[in-house]
Amino acid sequence: MNTQNDEVPPLNKEGRYAFFFDVDGTLAAIQPRPDDAFIPHPVIASLKRLSASCDGAVALVSGRPISELDALSAPLHFPLAGVHGAERRDARDNVERLSLPQEVASELTARLTGAMADMPGTQLEAKGMAFALHYRRAEHYQQAIMALAQAMTERFPMLVLQPGKCVVELKPKGVNKGAAIAAFMQQSPFAGRTPVFLGDDLTDEAGFEAVNAREGITIKVGEGDTQADYRLPDVNAVYHWLENILLQLD
Image 1 (cartoon, helix red, strand yellow):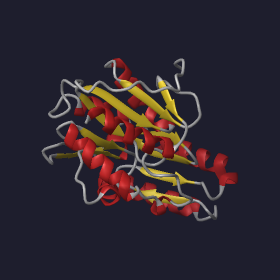
Image 2 (tube, helix red, strand yellow; image 1 turned 135 degrees about the vertical axis):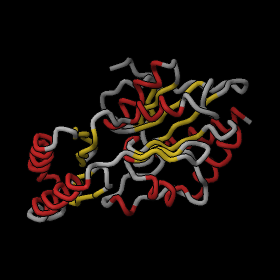
Image 3 (cartoon, helix red, strand yellow; image 1 turned 60 degrees about the vertical axis):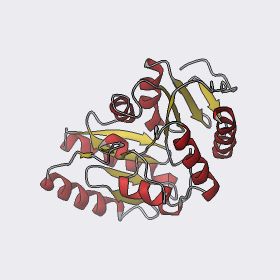
């Protein structure tokens, strides 16, 4: 864990930055149901200005699929890393996507659907190459959900667990936000810039590690141990920070 500094440093108007944002808990307030999340329209407008100020070097890096990220950020069209990087769309609209063998995906869907039907209030989110087991509305099932997910990784060793806030995900090995950010940083318009990454959850720690390795700026949103160098208290503070950096970069 890094020593925290609650005062995020100002950005240099002459600097060249690349911005990476998690979505849920960072740009969008956490909701009881993932489908209820939204990015406020003024924040969309701020992201549009930010992208214009840094030649398009703004990307969303999320556990959500690309299709959902596009819907949340419409009418904007960002480079995106979805499902923690299992699918990625670069600035030229090229899409790379991992996939599970069809028989594995089918069996996982059937097993998880059957098991979670006995846990009212839980929700299975099937993403094709990954599966999210939500229990925000039924936190008393946390241990049962974790045990179920662990059993699936034992049956399918190609998968790993990714715990989050009231969710645990099953995803392919080697997929994480750090690898996604590293891939972006090798391509235009991100290459040669100083990366800045904001995230709120355990899933963002690999991203913080990758950005720290490039001597970038890492910002944890909310409480909890982290590798990030700086911290903002909540989503509203992210919105305020975003407005401030637009003033700094104008």
